[in-house]
Amino acid sequence: MDKTINWTLYHSFLAVMEQGSLSGAARVTGSTQPTIGRHITELEKALNVSLFIRTQTGFVPTDVAHELLPHAQQMAATAASIQRSAQRVGEGISGSVRISASEVVGVEILPPVLAKLRHTYPELVVELVVSDAPHDLLYREADIALRMFRPTQNAFVARLIGQLELGFYAHRTYLNQHSAPRTVADLSQHTLLGFDTMSDYIRNHTAAFPMALDRTLFQYRSDSSLAQLAMLRAGVGIGVCQSGLVADDPEIISVLPGQLALSLDMWLTMHEDLKRNRVCKTVFDFLGVALAADYCR
Image 1 (tube, rainbow, N blue to C red):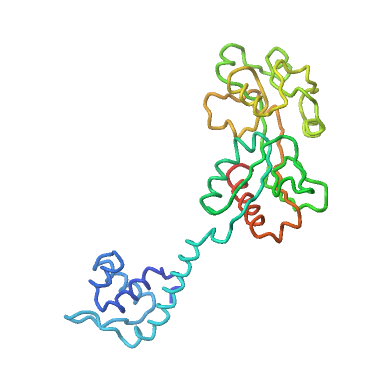
Image 2 (cartoon, rainbow, N blue to C red):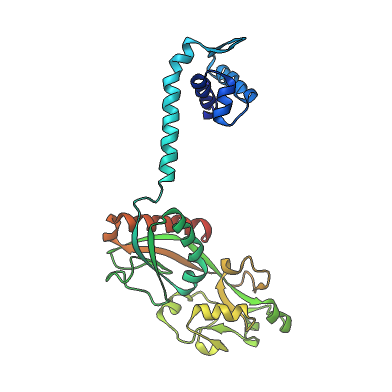
């Protein structure tokens, strides 16, 4: 017996048994008589049995066909159950979930993921907190957080989603007005975009940066990562941003490719107590799969 027999063959067999003819089976399955007949022949060959006696008045089931009938009916019932379960995806997942994310992640990355989340779980209410200041999960300022560092408290569940690559970029209009830098040292002759206040987060995540970092390095400064990204897209100067955010924009050009080897770890975190909360656990797992598949390496 061929263990890879297509369910469609059994489906056609069941339709013939229940309708008593090829024409009836074709009608209820939305197929054609020749297709149903071919399926029956293929199934008989795969099983090495005769299922029907062909007569001038139609197909007469053999004893083997009658013996197989309850099994085919069970397969049909199982298939219908699977379909009903798929249609019920999201039922019972309702209530509010508060998600915290950085500005860039919250505005540039999460919205398409949240659209998929809404489609899958339409009864959910999502509160999105967008801020570069980490919200305190320990005191439940958020249920789930997306962060670029792993929390140190033992009370958290933390899952590494993947890494976000960083690079130097500039808008084409800026590079048309200025010669593109060829070395890191050439950056000193350009308008650079960066932070206004040195934070512990920046200090800890830029240790591998190819130059000493200080606010005076940047001619245009902002502590808002979204503002920096907007200035880059407007052609103000050269800035550092996540490569995935501009990969599909032909107007944003990589500057000094290969000379900046930086990446950010993306962590999905929530309080350990919420592992027993079905709604939070469902959203946590959904975000982990969606983000890992579409945005991280």
